[in-house]
Length: 396
Ligand SMILES: *Cc1c(COP(=O)(O)O)cnc(C)c1O
Image 1 (tube, rainbow, N blue to C red):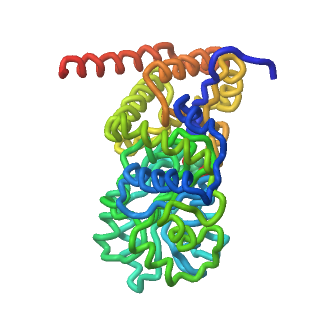
Image 2: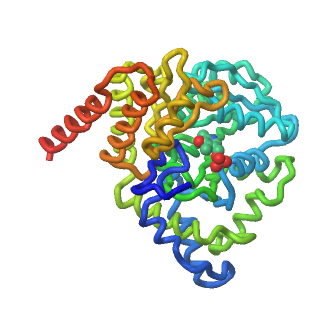
Image 3: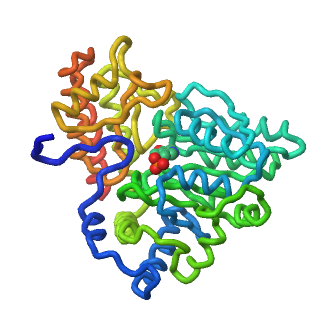
């Protein structure tokens, strides 16, 4: 393809735009991963990443995509024939279910409409009915990247406790960590699964398991075989800053920088920034006369917004026009939403003008693709951002 001037707008909900600071941090020679220089880096990232998860416990870093960390969470805690409770919140919950099934896990998969998160009362009801405690884990996708719906993990925790059930709580935060409020320890999560290429602003290639003491105890007695993913094999060398096999050294340089950026901004400010951009995006969508897929305001995602197409119009045709005309990538509808929605990613490294550029690209694209809509979405987003700034300035 011929050169296109200006920056590509990568507004899919991950991988996200990698900030220059992270790119520069990774632009270094690879070092001996058994040497003293690596040890310092290893210690720094293994310790430094913990506050991002909201944990004082261990976080394992795999050289793998998020799917690997999904698998690691299962093979380290469950045994063949174990039952788990899952909810069909969307495409990613479905894929995680499929992965668990391949390991002989029996998944109670509660059907959903792909417009709502995990219903806490249903969690409680299923667990109360499981008197013999045959359900060994509740598996939740915190932010359903296919729908833009965020499940309320603290309410799921409360439901498990209300049922007095000992199931583990495994949570996928691949598209929420570093963009949406998340607290592994405080929310009583047993395994948190994460990936590098979304809220953490890194290229793809790292993934994570944050582990509770209860999950670690389960890993001592569970019976699924594993080698590459084995927590114990990792934790031993991690204690001195090393890895059992070659780590993704240059991505770890990037991780150190990305964590520093998140801490400089302050996690609370990071979450507030994403909430604000998400609200501005929803106002733009309504301004266009289109509908946000997420049906429950308390579950709106700070990471992305899925937008429903008017009947008879193909989201992929719109995305194609926007890519060709404006050099912007938007997320496709996945699974049963293929062609029916497009997804605007506003996670990771992002600011007001990047958002307005993104929304302008969508508004111009709707016109160019002949999709019926009203003008004024971008203006509605601008008005919201300006009003927030005025309030902020008055408060200062
Ligand atoms: C992206 C994503 C995955 C898959 O991660 P990969 O890095 O592509 O393996 C899983 N779950 C959620 C919620 C995601 O957003």
